[in-house]
Length: 517
Ligand code: GDP
Image 1 (cartoon, rainbow, N blue to C red):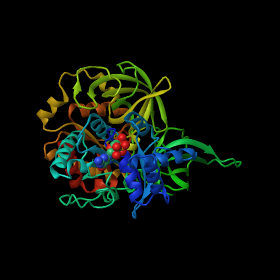
Image 2 (image 1 turned 135 degrees about the vertical axis):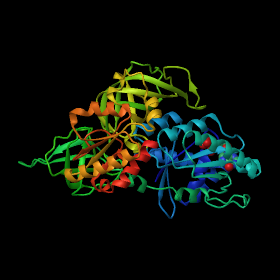
Image 3 (image 1 turned 30 degrees about the horizontal axis):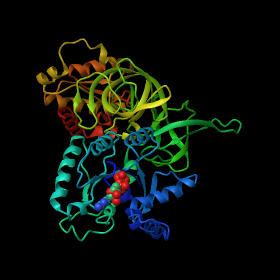
Image 4 (image 1 turned 120 degrees about the vertical axis):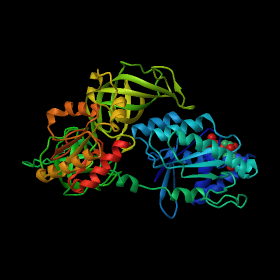
């Protein structure tokens, strides 16, 4: 399981990592003694961080091992810890997909307390969708192992994390230097009843969480069989989330083509690079995202949370290259709605985003792309903006905006309408092969909603009427559209399958809940 360790400089990241390696038995035999001997020969106090340096030096001489990765194992599973040298590199690696972390360890010195970078890191982790976090309040020996000192840091930091939407799994008082609560329970901190660091990470959810997510397979390349007359093609790429099996129907977005999986070359699970072949000879190109029942959004206009890394400021009207998964399109910054300080999280009164700031920004894309929202499938919501061949910023997609949004000239806002009607407008799609049955159920759901005072209308889906549907939604109408498959970009919660639709009372309840959310 890949983890990332972050923290303000000198709060003890390397020491904790060194300890983790030593105490989990990951070190080569004699390594610890060799470094201890070296220190005493040179009359230096021993540091666990030296151990790490010594290992990195060795590793970096090998060609294949990245110097910033450490490996260790518990009985439960193996771990890789990415030691993020600086937050900029960390963010860059995370958004470009060069690094991936299922969980994070945030180190805070007990005496030093929460610092700027501690906050920044927490914010970035939340921005990038790393929600499994263990906070390590380190150097507890320096505060006499006192509960009070620990509680203060814990209070300060969990309060901050809550603001950015992270509830830490554990906050653990540790001493990296003395090995307290790393692998062994500390005898000095009997007041602490929670898990040690090793126990805490074993409680993290592993890859199951990405295999349980909806299937997402961004196509990297399409290869033809070389045999004559063989019309089949292999679609190659890396499965970002979910699983796929032979015989399942897959949809490609944004083109909307569908087919059945004929073969899988390799493993059909999240995290694996694989190739799939289809029953039908579809024309699929690099960049499309394959999915199953719950399909990604197709969008030309996005509201994104952007973290900016470049010296050149982002202004409205600027053009960049937008990269998400294997898709690449031109984009224009059409609106800068909000700008935040990445440390204080305070909103700034300005309409441009400078280096190390976070912006809530609207991007107009040159072409349709497929993507997900960060609160649904974060892996396929991450994007990078490229400016003059530099990866200048990155972030996550928060919302898909209607292309027609800018044509809004009505002076009565959606909020005003909602207040009068008691609910907002929303489009729901009932989809399935048996249209006759589906229409019958849609009518029942419509009646149930109407009886409960909802302004509702049912219609057979007509691709050319999308604009009208969006407009009805803005007026506050609840639309029930019936079709053989979901024909427009809607949230998965608004797509009601054939089997769900049959339970009409329950569907009506679900719809009501979504309207009141
Ligand atoms: P990093 O910059 O976050 O990687 O911090 P280091 O691991 O290099 O630690 C910075 C300094 O803090 C070093 O001198 C460590 O020996 C010291 N240190 C780290 N953990 C502890 C601890 O638990 N107790 C004490 N007393 N010192 C520590």
